[in-house]
Length: 341
Ligand code: CP3
Image (tube, rainbow, N blue to C red; front, top):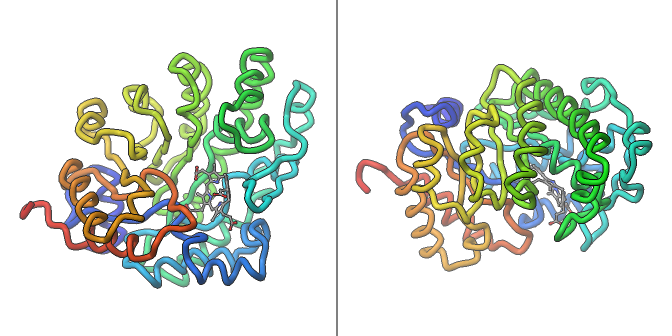
């Protein structure tokens, strides 16, 4: 099978010759060659330059035999395109110095045409496909709720106090912002499908910060609204800390679900039925000795079975990850045969 057939097959629940593998943040700070580029270029400049974005997207493919790449960018390019300033501060992560806190702040945001305001990722996708036609490329965007979190809080947060408070004190303005984000996100994902992405992933990293009631009331309808605008390629929906509402993930409109490492795969299979899944090795397990990484990788492959599974980490690879751990994971997936297990 080609990599394209293997990825597409796994994402649509068709039989494949072996489970495909890629991983979140596979282009990033654990790679010395990425750090070399970053010593010359800021993170945001990397996100704004298609040549550099393609260069770093290719880096992990030159080290590991992966079945797909994810285009290099960041979820916060959407708030930027809506007119909100975004900074990346070393050691602090993203900072949005003028957080959205009122209806007027929401109204002051732009709602630009996505093709005009966000041309870099579609252009990077086209260039990647020319450079590496044998490797499927994935597009992505942040989910409306996760973008709302950063835009309202103004930075990462443990408790998302301002973001949640806004839901409850100004539900109308919150709904307006989520609706506007959903439309931006959906259109952005569609431009990526149109540029040749094999599939797209919507990251709802902070879905698990919500109670079940609030997930149903806010994050889920916004995710549905965004995904309903995307046609022509499988749509993956990734959440973190979402074990308590796995049953709700069947109704997002996504074709496949990305699971974090806390999720028990047999339980997920029971709840999600034949919906394809992606995941879910603990990214910190890559710090274990290689034979332990391989053992854990094989355990996940065995639990997930041969159909409807894309191997991945349960969240992004972290900066200090030993490269031997990544090799051990990728090789364990590539050499695994379900019929012999
Ligand atoms: O997966 C990939 O390799 C594709 C590229 C990608 C990045 N960020 C590159 C990145 C993707 C898909 C993202 C998504 C993203 N960005 C999310 C959702 C998924 C997740 O990881 O939870 C979120 C919440 C963000 C916002 C963001 N960007 C944060 C919180 C940070 C700081 C993280 C940290 O560990 O410091 C970033 C920066 C970022 N995004 C880096 C990379 C490679 C590191 C930037 C650097 O080079 O300094």
